Length: 298
Image 1 (cartoon, rainbow, N blue to C red):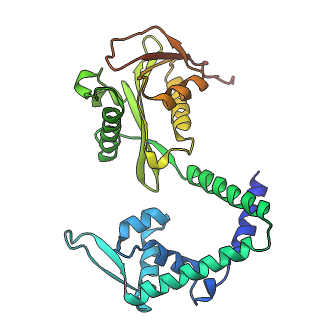
Image 2: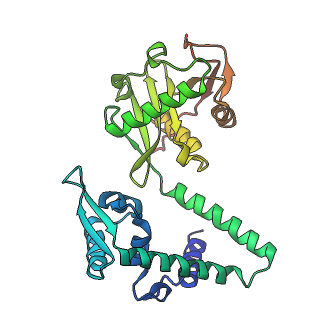
Image 3: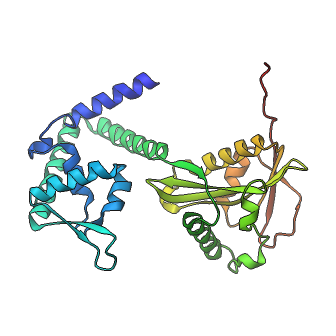
């Protein structure tokens, strides 16, 4: 599989002209052209560019200085925060970006032109699937302090979605709590999923190691990250961490309005059981028995 991934990468880089020092015939390599594309007409914060492109600060600064020297970009401080730097396209930069767009369209058409209609459809569908899976492979999941701003942001977004989707809304104060102290080891843990350093999902465990039971809480995926299989991955990560802490049974409850979540739990091996708590917003209660962690002999 590794060999096939490497062969695919070689084919793509050659076909798209990535190896060219003058990408799309404009006298600059792909890195500089891509940076021009990423800077919006309204300007972009430098730290956001670094995060979105996965570049270290030094390399991004060199790219920006080169584009500044070409008269395509200016870097200045934010109007409201002097600590924030913003990259903006000059009129020449906007014109160059438009030309790159035109030439990129021409390149895409040259890839499609030799193919018949069926081949074109297959290629575009395959590209969409590859893009989706590559984005999914860029997501990382970290244990995070529930008091961290990223954790707060995800949990608040989760509450807001529940309030929007539940009949009669949702009030966290009326729900069984999962307080900060309950989501820090040894009492529990909170996972945050990141895509390009932006939090896009969360999931938590409340551990009851004395009876080998844990509760899954705060399962939420941002709409922008849905369709990547991230919910299933988050659930599997929670299960693995629960097993590592000696948990043999996982429990969770959910509302009937969350149909996709219910389908996820069922296909992941959770079975519906009688209510095991007094959660006022729950319509379904689920349970899954986990295999014990295998210990290899010495």
